[in-house]
Amino acid sequence: MNYQPSVSIVRRLLPGLVLGFVVVIGLMLLGDIQKVSRTILQFQWKYFFVAIGCTLLNYALRFIKWHFYLGQIGVRRLSVLESLRLFVAGFPLAVTPGKVGEVLKAVWLMRKTGMPVARGTSVVVAERISDGLAVLLLSVFGVIAYPQFWPVFLIILALLLTIIVLSQIRPAAYWLLDLGDKIKLFRRMSSILREFYEGSFALFRPAATIVAVILGTVSWLGEGIGFYFILMGLGLPPSERMLAMAVFVLAFSTVVGAASALPGGLGAAEASIAGLITLTLHQDPALATSATVLIRLATFWLGISLGLIAWFFSPELFGLTSNSEIVTET
Image 1 (cartoon, rainbow, N blue to C red):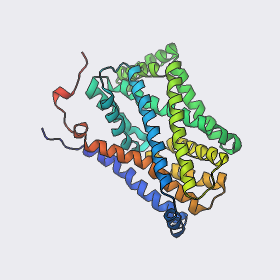
Image 2: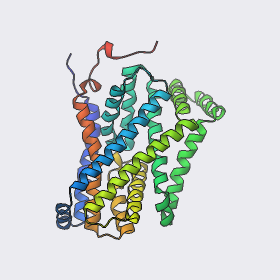
Image 3: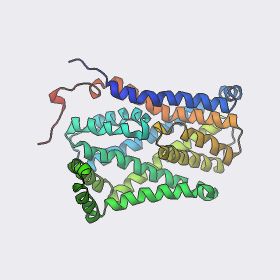
Image 4: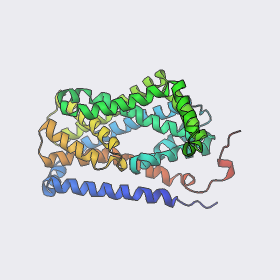
């Protein structure tokens, strides 16, 4: 059987990849490209590989959360290795606007296990919400030190908590679903919405949410520590304050990037990182730009690269599959 890549998903990724290139060039121009180049050339690259190690720890813990979530919605027949393959293959989908392309993971899950796409999509949403709560927790101390960030912090926190709380109030949820059945537009999606809700109810139960947020907090803390080493590699003296600010800057920038709904948060995340480095650590634009480029290479673009490698070894995810590869519900 001949496999062929999905032209549709590739086309959706291209604008994000182009935007990523434009963002890097724009940052370097704003930070004075000659100064930025000199700063990066003087960078101690051993710290870059430490940062990559911290990012891999982040991915490992987030995978544990992903696999834990699959168990919560009833996926039992998917091996750990196959689960890992789908998880890593989902990384490049973050480049789609608002990360909506990640819904494709639910399609892959359906093909492998028969789990309805709507219920699989609830895992993707739960991942984003638990990650959001995790990075908000890591941002707390920085937000206390810089109260001008409180409005953004509180709005996003309130939104995430509202979603979780409402998902656990079954009478209210079913009332809304029943109300939707009376509206022609939503009536057509009634079964999908109910399937999505059942998955969300299971994933946002208190115990599951606590486990997910703990895993998310530790995993994103790992990337914050990686950023700390990037700053050390650029010549900043190590200190507890710099560690705290590195974790805050990366966590809060992740929140800003996600809230922007831009592909992969591109542009918004970079601007936040560079701006916060200048504000909190009082560094010149060239160093702030260099740190931003390096940490995004060691985190976001590392994930994209790993995902594309997974795509190369998983052609069936984007082509026609044989009937034996698709498990249907009985």
